[in-house]
Image 1 (cartoon, one colour):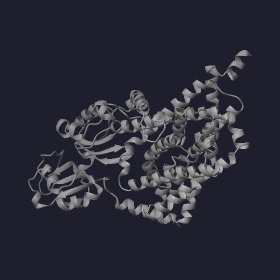
Image 2: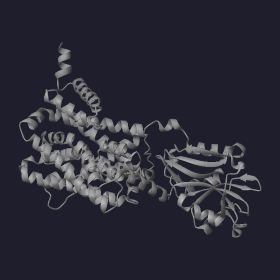
Image 3: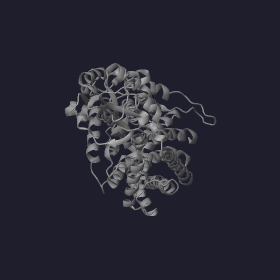
Length: 557
């Protein structure tokens, strides 16, 4: 039975360590599916299973566990950056600035509440524990990793920060949702009225949403002018994909001459449709000749998979001149965009084109249109990005008054680089497209490895910390750190910025980077408003959580 004893208890055995991680992660994932009042801890339960196993003496070689912990953290934050990067810069459009200001204010309040409680109730040497409580109170695992790394720069090693995180996390999930519900009563929110307000906003805000219509040329001033001149005179951005002249359908280009009575199939931004119709003539019903069943032209979606197309604009591809087709719309990550000439294509885009069948087929071959090609993740981009991210995160940034230079570290460096690569990678000929399932798989594996490592390392002292020490006080402090900023920021966002309650719910969930809170918000709202609020503030919130956790240690430590 020596083999069994070696497998179960030898900390230097690779088989033992793999077995331990497999057991901790599998049990944690199963327990994380349990819902209490509709709320579950998800994969975070892995942390508590790891603590339990560590408490009973199951551990492994510390160097190996540290490696697995750091690699898991890098993989997790890098995949997050790839996911949110494309929307990070566009999130500062309408409403985005105010939401991100509110999120930043909540993050600063979290830190302020933690600092006050630490100064009033604890000793200086309790700082690692309180920073762990802060990370747990805001349910931010990458922040925990960044703070842990900063402690390592100061020569500290110990389980307190992970114990503090574990003390605060469970009640934090409940506290975020509870505080969000409390705001509804404090601000006297009527859910039905909020849904009606969202519907009115969606009707009013139609810009960028493509609109397809048939227009008859009736304006005498347009007789014998070209389609290019029409665009210049109308001073509007639109695409004319087909033209019907004297009963004959054809594919127009910039030099096509217009005549009275011509019927045009136009795609434009929804809020510009009325102006375009008024200028050209009048809107008409679809002609039967425009029906694909009787048309010499076909309309088809083409999937962009060719690497050398990545990052090129539609004007650079010259679809009309080289291929004899017109592009009308682009479908990207569930969003429909107008195919403007300056619109850059990305791997994974689906572009709607109109033209003769053979021309459309030639364009499809040029753009790739290979679904199988997208099934393979771009591993080169992932590891090139991680390599650059680690180098970037290791650069020391000297700040006056701080004992050691600040580093973005293994969490902040890869996060920033992944955001930049996902947005501008095409300029370096890097294909950043990764399927949602592949991204989620890598991200969840990284998070699971990190949480299991932290739990296993902290398990030896966790029970004694909670039961014999000030564990219950730490739990209470974590709850206050969670709730107080929400109750301060929520009414301000509601009354000062007139934020819709469902959007506010998503903003709070994104500020605390908390998926269970987002799930509750989605269930309550039944619309996309919480997801919009979540994604708008999530990138900046994640970045600030990681950076502030590290800076807090270096300043106060």
